[in-house]
Length: 103
Image (cartoon, rainbow, N blue to C red; front, top):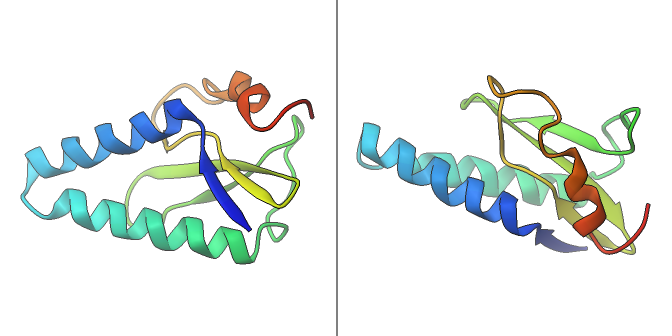
């Protein structure tokens, strides 16, 4: 399965890494490592999580207060956001249209 990030999700990832590196050197790398493991796991188990009402699935990170909403289209895993759990829910929902065409 191919893994793709919508552009905003890629920027959120870079912002989160930078944020954690400012808190403590190496913490950003730990965040990225956890996220990488999570996304690779999703690619192998994409259908495991329940589909939400508006058509996406999500997984929570274990250590950091973030979750990863995603959709699968034509053997491509689209990461829609690297979403901070304390942020307004579904702020990223319109990004589904950027993920390989219509639902």
